Image 1 (cartoon, rainbow, N blue to C red):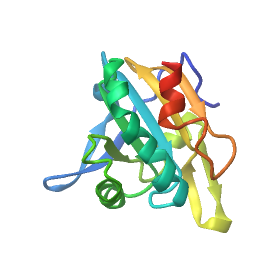
Image 2: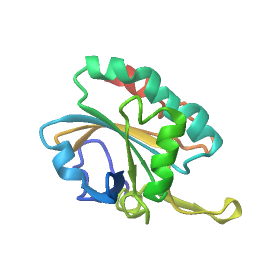
Image 3: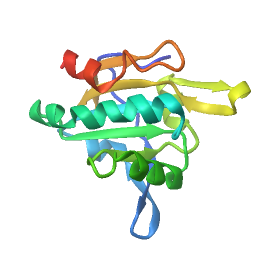
Image 4: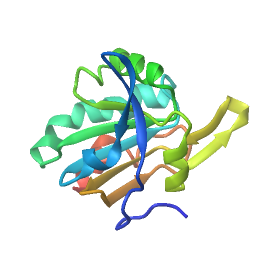
Length: 162
């Protein structure tokens, strides 16, 4: 089953690089009583993710904050070291976007938004999407249905729906 508007996000624990290396990040407390934007990408350092998706949320961060969004979170089925380095190289970390690792892809699977593409070496990855979550409940969900594109799920597209 695929997550839908009105559904509560499942419990999840991600990894993020902290002062002492990889540290667990529980999703539920980050969402409790807050409006949060979550966007997911198939692969850090890939062209569309690096050149379109992340930059769209860097560009729109101030506008999201003006609409009462507490945090913007980027999730990918990459290890936390890759997410940390990628956040630094794209400017996402400097912009205040939280870069979280769904290392085994279990969150994407729980949402019904995972895929594998062996021809490109992508296994148990997340589909490209963005969502607005209020107190853990999905209010807006924008999922790309065509690979290699960032039109439906980009920052500007999600912002226009809020």
